[in-house]
Length: 377
Image (cartoon, rainbow, N blue to C red; front, side):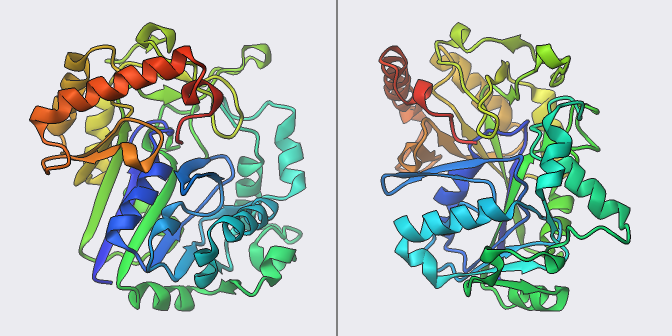
């Protein structure tokens, strides 16, 4: 591998990681993408007039040199969803037929019984109830009657000629023979079962080291970590009727409303429930950058702060922790600007902010994308 780029959400999710992965792939042009998906995390990408909401496939398919997608051994796979996404991708992006999808034989499958076990609630606070925790538990228990590893399951998508089940050695060969590798992750660092606000977390660790383990990528030099952030971090919705609270934030952050910053209420990508929103936490950003060795930052939802000085303050504070190389002002790749280039110098930042802030406000009043669609997740 001559270059590796790992994309990590540094907050609670929904920072636009899927959007950024599609954007980055167009410039890095990876020939291989490593991913360890889970159906409790959705990623949104609008490209060529189509909106793709993926839970199983990475969104870096925009790169023109892509030939391999590897779903690593830490994956938790919904086979029906994988089949749906692959079929949809072929319909709208004919070039997607050129790449192969390799799945490690020890990836776990989320089966109907796992979804049923979580459907009635009573799971971890903030759970999306997609069966992920139950599927993970069954894999860990390693019982004689457990059969949720993908090597033991039959499904139409696994008989697709574009899909192949592989072992560790084959996976290593794919990675080591790759020229440019893009590693995509799901969920956010602050939801880590180890580093987040337990028990209001996901069932897995979400760090650079764990993402490498889940995708099966061998540790080598030359790994660049891209951390994605949003100006106002979010958490998934609480479920008061079920007695479920999705968790607190950091001590230097406070919960606010979308209305207070002049934005329409966002909905979660998977559950379609109203998101909670918080002010910027420097402690959260610092912890994430240190733990994950974030080299480059993507600050998204830059049009959300009500005044330019608020946006600029967040930008400056994040710049104290990592190199902020990209700024996002909307739901498409055309709304992403590279910093310190002719595309966006700091002296032009206020003009760009004003343009997108006005557009966001107009769309909100007219019931535009901010209201009718979930933001990139």
